[in-house]
Image (cartoon, rainbow, N blue to C red; front, side, top):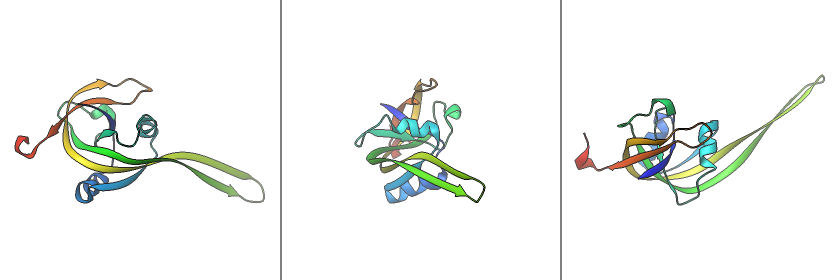
Length: 129
């Protein structure tokens, strides 16, 4: 099945999702943030620890369902008597529910400015290699 991918996730996030089955993650990296702008609650996505250029057929990860998605803005203000600086950044907060373990069959789309699309097989424990 074809999934949009979130890449470069921390190992502890993947482990917590595997253990708890539901996890909320705040995404700030630009490639993953723009990927999440293309999905809706109820969609399934593929999560992996590998960075996008390192994904090859056989790369493992998790298939998760999006339960909730929220785009948030962080505002930071710094000032003293000489200057005033205000910065804003956006992030996506996404609640994920574990569906299955998956393995990449092939990369279907890896073009700049578009989400990474992968053909992923669900790995059943009896099929594990």
